[in-house]
Image 1 (spheres, helix red, strand yellow):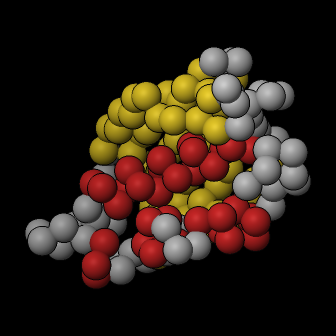
Image 2: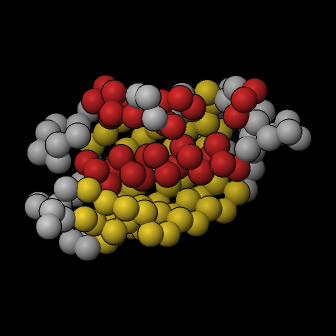
Length: 141
């Protein structure tokens, strides 16, 4: 994905097709204004054996939104990024329906970016998780 192109939900969903976000069903719903919004239908294969939403499912949704937001906001001359730290606080869960999130920039530097993501239960708006991701910006050699 070129860092010079206009990013849309459609282009981002195509970008993730055939990889983990696409296989799990992550859907980018909004790109712009320094934010990326995404959602994920809760399905049985995304649950833990105890019947609750697997923490890895929540983290994958949040990490995908943060990563795509980073791609859409790379500084001039940068060509990629890599995650150097993630943190997730889980405050609730879901067993059905859908979860949604919005990634917002906390820091947009030339060498690092920090993204905060709030994951919610789409049906009632309750917060499921608070996620923070630090990205190292990569430049061509």
